[in-house]
Image (tube, rainbow, N blue to C red; front, side):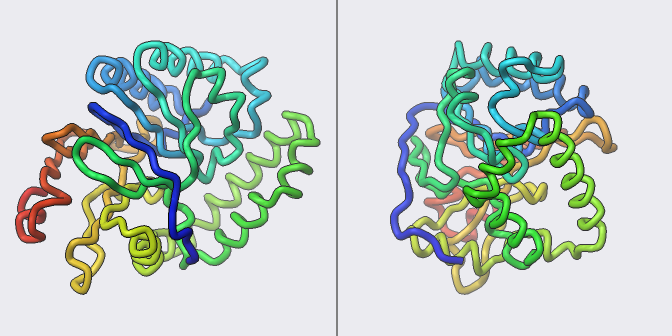
Length: 280
């Protein structure tokens, strides 16, 4: 995968929280309720909250906010309430890549680039949703190129919201059915694609979501200092046990919070590889 030699950079001071893959929608009321409680907790504990893609199960255009369905009205209210207290940032995912400036302005949030280098009080890292790194899934990557083409999006926007929703529902069902026949490896990120973009941007740490496989992953024996942190997904309606989590970054601690337990990743950047593994 080709990557730019210099990505957008951003510095955030203070406690930073990152969450991804909440998949808000009408079919996930319990997931939504858990996420709204999380927003209240985040408003008390962090200065910055970054939602790293797939915030919504599907986003068919910013026009939705002008006459939102009940579930969306509630979601927008909670996100607005958070942004009135702390800084909120949005990153587009594979399900909500049509999020635009209108939604960000409405939420008093900042829409971040799809790929960026983030500097925090603890360390600097490469941040993205992660679906572009699943390069072994050739059918998905073809689909991704098509739906992100400007002409495709122009045609999509020319349709009514009702028609767009039908199309989104069709492709979501098709994707779910196709996913049942794909191997575990194909739906994960490609290690070579990760290493390429990390080396090109001189960033030994990558943080992403999308794969729903939260953990600290070391790339390979040849690059012991290169690692990626995968953010948890959220699911309280169709999974037992439920899943949720986030990553918190302070000047002293990097912690991966998951439903039921926390993993302290302190020293994930500066400590020797043996110590990093011991801290997980």
